[in-house]
Length: 518
Image 1 (cartoon, rainbow, N blue to C red):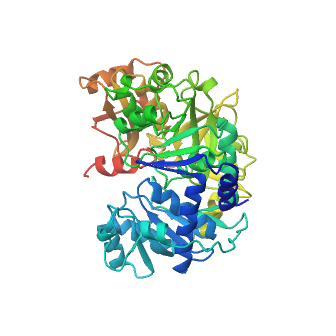
Image 2: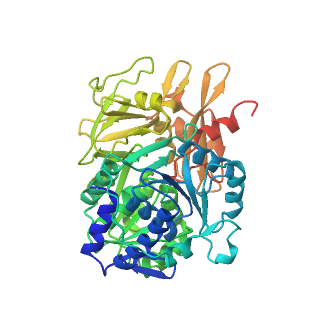
Image 3: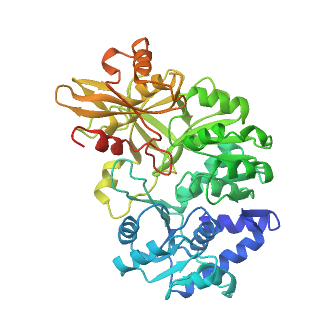
């Protein structure tokens, strides 16, 4: 099964069911299918063939999802690009992927023109401007192509399930983005996994406020709802107020939101004015969520809360179900139906076999196997060979598995703090900080120190403006849950933590900015 066939199968089963809602427009599956086919024909007329890479540099919108599924019908490879990236960063991704066509958002014409100046390998540029008069000379207009191209109903190319469906670039929390190769088999497996784990139905109405250029938004939320004939409501530009309004207006049943968005929704003063009783499920992931936030979310918003762990290379690998969410708020749950997981010795000096599991409650590296594990990294065979061995993905994430089989995240292996010869895991310090009244968000990193090698530094976003470093320090000193050498030696208050679009904290940004001499 390929993604294009999955789409057409849903169209055949639910032709008159509402497929997509964006701004003030609604499409049934039949109507949207016609639009997708016309745009696919337009791309074919421009010379796009199976295996060609086509990028879309667009905010979450109708044009981004229409582009994605048009490419699936052609057997071409979708390259979703973060619309927040600069022209130089976009050009780097397009060059690396060998992109043939760039589809860009209505507010991104200036950056698209800069990319065109830098990069001469891109054959065509397609603007999603609302008005065709705003399209730069020499560029094409998305709506004109999608509305006026004649669908000649030519036989559709059927890719094998091992051909690429997408190149999804990593968010770069630890370095430069890499193109992760998703096959059709990967993405169908991810969608089926989510349908089964979440119990999705054709009556579900999903609200998309998280980016669709990441696996968590598209492969693990949009496609699963499409698979069952559900309705996908695409918000566009995110705000807490618009989200609350849409939850009520569209009678949303399922929501995927990163923890920072959940915090914003709960802190919005208008929160209690909206009727969100239609919401039957919230799923989150990408970053830690505090026990206090989880309890309030459960009490005031929705009782069915899922907390998932995954990565671009293997989406939705672990899942904490609602029955366990309140009792184990710090856990990522257990392996999903299609996932095999182990925690193995973390030894960077040698290739640790997947059979070398550590004891219960001992910290090691999480390794994953399953049909959702991506084929590797585009143009990077050496990195692929290091990360995927004998079918097991070495995630680089530190976990422990308790006696009851629940997995607990302890941070990236690269984030380990070695202070005075002792290993300190940021997550254990952060969990203590989250229990301090007045702490809304916290991130812990190691900063260089001439005496200790590294010192523990805590960066905190306050919910109580009166919270002081002295109060935080006293909270840590009075705790029996943290050894003295693990206590933060430096405490910095910030208005917001630097995060990527997935909500993951960019620790390297904190290290670079606050290291001595920076």
